Length: 141
Image 1 (spheres, rainbow, N blue to C red):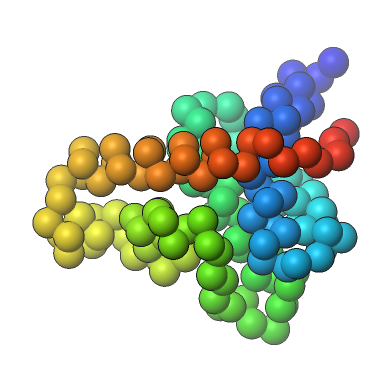
Image 2 (cartoon, rainbow, N blue to C red):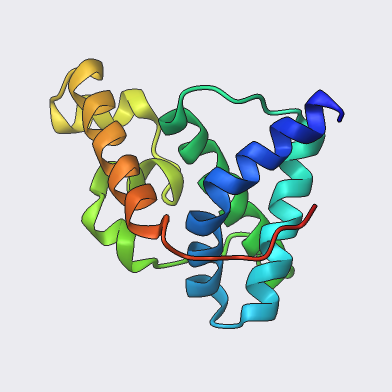
């Protein structure tokens, strides 16, 4: 089996429950959520994103999913604002992913070090991923 395909399968198995849950919350439609999920993984494959630290991938994949959802759900408004309930409990992640606030700007505005902010982001993303790891989706491969 092709190494890239195996890598994509591993990424899908690990991240699809979380990403599908987010897509479903955005669209409230199982079909639309599945389409967003598939398109997000097509982007992941095209970008040749390799397996690495889970927290880093969680952030990248959530950002790709939101970008995909914005163009899929309402292509005329690529700047559509999504409010996802699980991000209400993750203020740093919400600011970085949805409000496009830069990491340095966040640290300066909140008077926290990069290390403190990075630690909090890891905790927030792990909590989101853990919360949604129980959702089952059908494989795309």
